[in-house]
Every structure is written in C-alpha cells, then in structure tokens.
Length: 492
Ligand code: GLN
Image (cartoon, rainbow, N blue to C red; front, side, top):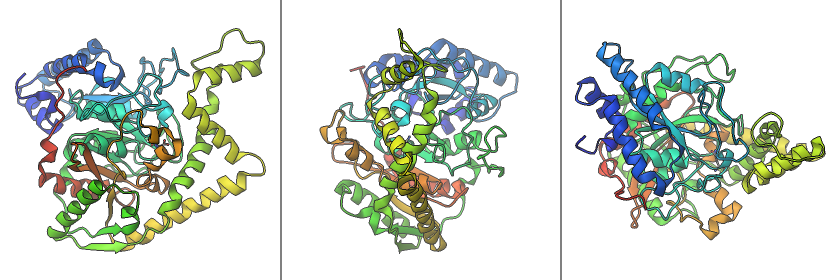
C-alpha cells in the first residue's frame, strides 16, 4: 500500500475504505507488518494476535461488500490498553499479579467498539496497574518514545500513545486517573482526551481510583479522537456513575463556535515549567488571541495542593480496590504456603511491583484508624475546594488553557525521575482536572529543540467535550506539526 497508510488519519482511512480504494484487511496487514518490524524496539504492545485482528478486518470487508458498513470506524484498528477487559483475551494490567488471567467478558467500551465494527488490535503496555507517568513500572519492561527511543512515552497509557504516534495503530484507548491519557499524548505528539467523569462507562475497566478513573481516546487528529469518543460515550446500565445524557455527534460539531473566552492562570506558568514548553504554549495563546478569542487572566490558587490531594485520594482508593488481588480469586498464587495469612502476604509480595506496593502502603496509612479524618477526610474537603476554584473560573471563561506537562518527555531510567516524588510532580497540571471530574484534551503545540513533542491542555466544563474538540480542531487546522511523524526505520 502506497503513501504510508500507517500514518493516515482515520478520517482519511475511512474515506478510502468507503471508496473501495483500501480494504480493512490490507490496512490491518500493513499495520501488522510494521508492528512486527518495529515493536521489539518500542514495546508499545504487551501482546497482539495478528490472525485474530485480520479475521475481524475481513469480517468488516465482508460487511462493507454487502452494503452493511457500520460507519466510519468499521474496519479501523483500535489498540487497547491492557487494563480494559476483552472477552477471551488475557488481561495483565502490566503486572505479574494477573499472570494466567483471561477476561471472561467485554468491558462496555469494548462492546461499543464491536458495535461500530472497529478491529480490536492488541494489548498495549502500561505502568503496573496504571500507576506511573512513564510506562517504566510495567512488569513487561518499559515502552520507548517513538520520537527518540532514549526517552519515555509518558504514562501510564504509554503503550497506547506510542502505538498511535509510531503508526502501529490509528487509534487507541487509554485510561486517565491523574493524567494517564493527556500526559502520554503530549509526550508522543498526538491528541488525547479525558472525558468528563461519568461520560464513559468504567464497566470492565480495572479499578485504580474509582472516583477518578475514566477511559479516554487517543488519535493523530482531533476528528479521529472525536469519532472514537462518540463510539464509547454514553449511559451504561452496568455503571451507575455513567450519566444518562445524550451523546452528541462530536465529529460533526467540530466546525462550531469560534469566539471562545479563554482563561490563563499564571499558577500554571510558574517555576518548574520548562522554557521551551512555556514558549510553545505562549505561542498557542497568541494564536487564539489573534483569532479573536478574548484571553482572560484567572486565578487557580490551589494548584500546589493538588498533587498531595491526589496522592491521598488515589492511594486510598487503590488500597481498597487492589485488596481483591489476594492469591485466591485471581492471577498469581504463591506456592507452598502454610496458611492463609502467608498465602495473602506472599502472593501479593511476589505479584505486585515496588510502585504498587508503595501506593498500597500509603493508602493503608491514610485510611488507618485515628488518621482517617486527618488525611482522607481532609483530602476530600480539599477536593471540594479544587472543584470550586474551577467553578469560579468557568463563570467567566469557556476554557482554561495550560501546558499538559511541565516538561517534554524525560529520559528512560532518569535518576531524577526514579525518585517517586519527582515522578509524581510530572502530573501537576493534569491531576486538578481529574479531581474535579472535568473534561480536558491534550494536543500537540510544538517541538523542543531536541525534536520532542510539546502538548497543550484545554480544560472545559462538564459534558462539554464538543467545545473542547471544536477549539482543538480549530487550532489543529492552522498548524502543520500534525503532519509530522517520527522516522522509524528499524527495530533498534
Ligand atoms: N501518573 C499518575 C499516577 O501515577 C496518574 C496515573 C493515571 O492517570 N492512571 O497515579
């Protein structure tokens, strides 16, 4: 297939499929070949089954031939973070803990993807149990950044972001609890969206911090992300936190309104923000201003307490959610134990990696008798303050525009980032959004001198993903870095 089909957008691919100039099987074969050639050096995938993907692609071609196409995603491969259940597929969560476990059912989002004919394509790598910002805590080894393999792809959904940026998949699903879709999208130079909490069902998605977790789409263009969001959003009777609101036609609404009021908060541009990131984001602000969008200065006074707040709430919820991995019900079970106490302790000790254990310990501590109110209770009240700060800001503006992350991708095995606190700080601009349950999108807005992508974050009001997508689309259409892709020629 000519013209590097692996870098075409879904918008273009689905037009080619529709016109009969490309078949889903041809597309899948080309991705499979590319993945076979490159993934050893990237490790975007934990595993993939080319034959099964081809079978799904052929079914799509058959449907299309009979005039029964299921829409723009019919025949389009979507890579799946190995944190989301697909019936009959192993589910690892990047951990040894789930060794040998096979999902008995489809997550709701997978069910939705099947309903639109998408090809489920491979299980992507992630930080163990989605805890991390670099995809280095995976028990299956780290994923590389496709722009420069000496750098991390971000995390925890680093495998999904890498697969899309490297042209191994046109689309991917990730999950975002504190930034795990937006930050890897920024580090890999693609578009990633965290929907409003409740917009997408969490049924069949491994629980990390249930009051924060949301599934989010990755793509190489805003249209692609809008289309994938449209497929997975909506009320699911299995998840009582999913909202019964109608799902707009996101892709069709991209040409909407233009004169958005954009808020800028100086707290997001303070010390710690890398200079190149700062100037790229400033240029984006100028772009919107020159396009006629009023830019308002707003204040988000609580930014510096968000990381602390997040790590109390997220670890408390993780502690509770991860108690189900006990060596009895799922996955890894220690051998030769004498009693049930030893079974729990050894199974968990052997199955979980260091970062997961650190979070479980911290979660147990903040919930422990006598401290519960001092830590967890207070963290919940701080969370309310954070939500209110946003509410106040959104009285006067439509969006808040910020950098997605304070730096570009950092080196793999970086000593500074081996320090857990340094790693936690890379989420400083993304965690406030999940704490408040708001939607936000990360989109490319430039490159560093070293050629690493820079991401811009737009944060919006609940359930107004259409507006975020429209503004992102407007920005995308006037910038050519969306046509730039990593040059990847050999596996190493
Ligand atoms: N990096 C953050 C953490 O380690 C966020 C992870 C996520 O969003 N899943 O918790």
